[in-house]
Image 1 (cartoon, one colour):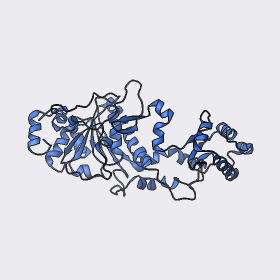
Image 2: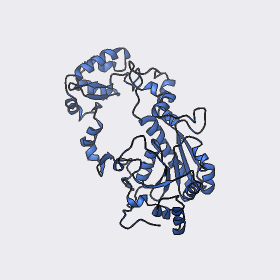
Image 3: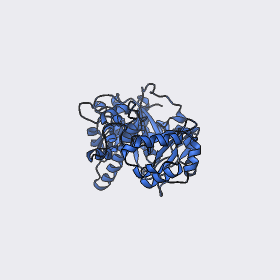
Image 4: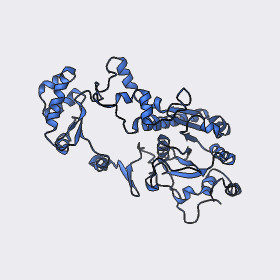
Length: 395
């Protein structure tokens, strides 16, 4: 069985700077699917390999909302069956990139580790993403974003002085230190391959990726400009001019006027006693400054303050909810959020002047039809029929 069944929708021709690249994504949780989504929207053709016996996911979403599957072709394989593992090796031999997020040793036990796969395709870029890295005493341990932040020292730094450390959703270790660092590694390896013709293995660790995001903070500490105690510093709610404040309607505004000229503008419009302008960075004045700011902010609603500061460089913003952010005039003007079916979601990012990205949609029928998928990887009609007969792929 080859090609899409009659009437099945095929994926639209992709655009973007990675158009033409073939990516294999080993299905999993967390940051690897986000990385694969972004590679897909940059133009790469992504084939997501799902386990034939995969159970119920941690968070089950209707397909129209499931970004872990949007923009991909989907192939279910039993990789514990040697025939299924061999098929994946054949697919990897025709791919440019493979990304996986299993614990160290899982791909090796399946006979699909980088040593084996790179023998079949020396030009392949094999991206591996874990919490702790491929080796080390914790490498086999399970974890989540909060776990990796704790080991990186970052969770200790997040939150207020008089409160426990606060987890920042799963944005820092999973998505920032994980997905973004994996993508950076893949793109760097692609450039190196363009010079040498050789692929390589990327060992991306969420602890190390998140730590790298905090490299400037480590530099500030080394220079004596940052305390290792939470809530005492310039960017961690320690400074009264870089914090959030409750408004008259029990909402909040964000104040971020670090530079003296921006703080002076903020003080003029609030208004704030001029004595604070000259002592902005005098920490002994911060308690009184904070109390004065908080008192003034409670006099008006969030939107009244937003309107007052809208046309200024005082660096004051309304704290919008996720839903409100979609309707903000700036985000609407930039089309920063887009609609795909009934899903309104962030637009593909970043933007490219010459290669507009393709918004990923839920897999069409043709994106889940094994015959058509395998044909694109060079398998013959007879081979596909034999695999279907053996039960390695669905009919």
